[in-house]
Image (cartoon, rainbow, N blue to C red; front, side):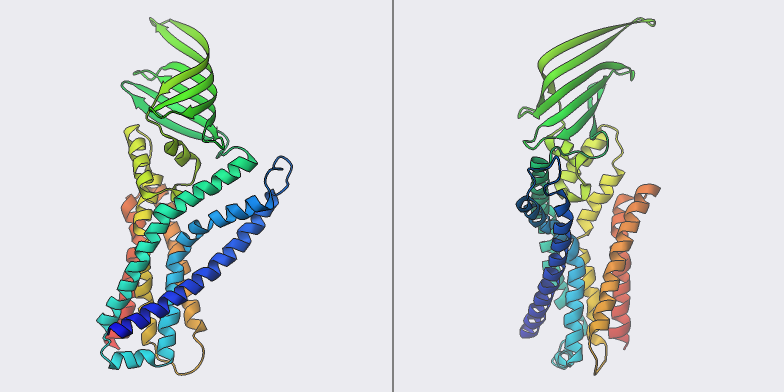
Length: 368
């Protein structure tokens, strides 16, 4: 049995590697063509072909993380169908490879893909994606999202702060920082605007070219406004550089622990974290989809055909994988709109396809 397991594992790993390399080459080509529109454009003279090439290369781990479950499905289906077509799997069955042993063999292989997917998505992809964004910022200008940049909220004792960072600079600084302070009764207490700022090592922001207005309520009918101009100002805060970057970057590009810390920050300051909670649970359950895919591929080994290619079966596997990702995205958007439970929204597609794959396994393998 050890020899048979090694054979299946080796063939599946080679097939998955080949399919993954093909998909990554395709994405690399499309991404490079898309990046060429920025090369030499007015206002982006510093962005050359080598920078575009580097950006595309650094984006490969993110594509790898997104593609792994579907390439695992396609590669495993190809191997199992080919073994069935050449009657090798029939020989394995007569040698003692029962249905449950075959299932355990594929689940062991799926566990390896789960660990690899988790490592890529949680450690490699976030680092390379951030490096890719820094390449874009360094040679194209500032990093910003939307019309006004990042908005964050923080509570300090009985006062609350609404913070706006318009953009991030290539060296990790901030541009056009605005801080609105509200007292315990929700009245505007001060407004601070800085042309630039840096993240300090002691938990404070170093703001430069500061204009600050303080509003002091006197009684019920009178208010005093005090304007202050200062070259620098230290503002104590618990908002870190990662939190600001999280507001500017896509949440699915963040590591699981960073998402968890950002969700805690949002909850502590009374902000909606539904979108980030769904992304957090999707990051938790997404690697487990590799297990679903290998179970979905197992029934293809029990199909009976003597002649013809296996392209039709592989195409069916591709369609099954695409439908899984479509359902995953649909549940994510629907859960965010309908305020569904985040963990159930993220786990539902995997549970549905697990039931379908186990039902197919039971019908094709156990009953037939």
